[in-house]
Amino acid sequence: MFGLFNKNKIAEEVKKVFIAEDYKDILPVAEYFKNETGVTFERQTSILQSKVTTFCKQREIYSFIELLNTIEHNKNIKQELIDYLTTNETYFYREFKQISELVDLVKKENNKVNILCAPSSTGEESYSIAIALLEAGIPSYDFHITGIDINSDALNKANIAIYRERNVRNLSSDIIEKYFIKNGSEYILNDNLKHLVNFKLVNVFDSSFKQIGKFDFVFSRNMLIYFDSKTRLKAKEILESMRKDNKYNVFFGHADLF
Ligand SMILES: C[S@@+](CC[C@H](N)C(=O)[O-])C[C@H]1O[C@@H](n2cnc3c(N)ncnc32)[C@H](O)[C@@H]1O
Image (cartoon, rainbow, N blue to C red; front, side):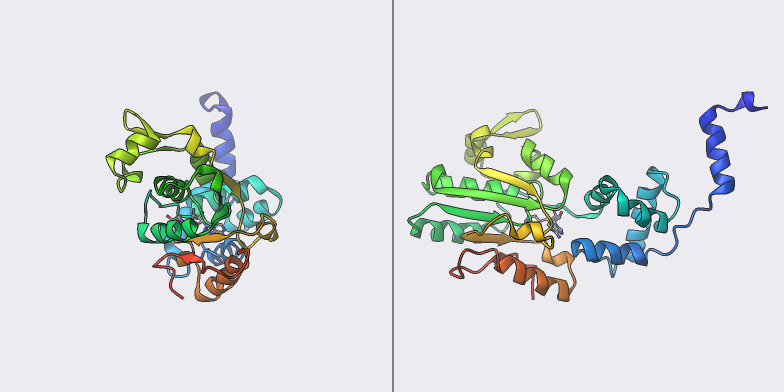
């Protein structure tokens, strides 16, 4: 009889009989995710439930409780869940007015400045700042940019720095020609620009965040929108503490209202 089945098929059938799937109570996962990352799914629990169910099934994890237990001792699965559930939407020259304000302030400084983008997502914001500073005639040795994010996939993309049309849609053709090589539908960022930014995998709520140093300017746009109001205030305080002095306000996004 077993000749009809291959080994994997048998294993699958055995699992179905002996392991009861339970993907009902998503709240402990939502709670865990919020505690770890700040990101809340309070008003989107059914979306979260469906996404995490898919995540579990792809990894043969049969319940949300099993997922939480697995994450306890498996850092890779934890990172995969973070990569899967965080939203990385961004593009070059997003909310450019603030970048332009930064350029004016940097021009007034006589020293080399350090700039933090927390979060950087796939790199467009950090590279936009580099481009805008260069375009304003500020030499590359006068600034350094650090981009941090909790999403490792996003940071890999930031390091590779190959973008699509929709990512560069706000850039003029002159800027594109100057800083990218176009290859089919891909926009490959020039290496000399890539060297002006360092990306690091860091959670803003982790103690390691404070260890990356202090910065003249801090950008934190479109991350707090994913947090509840209490967590936003906590993040605001942490981000403000990353400044070298209190000379300049942190650049928050227009949607990151308090
Ligand atoms: C929508 S992107 C914003 C990117 C860019 N700053 C912009 O405005 O276009 C939000 C990013 O916040 C990151 N993020 C969420 N929670 C985080 C945390 N606790 N620490 C660091 N990054 C976080 C996500 O991974 C995501 O890449």
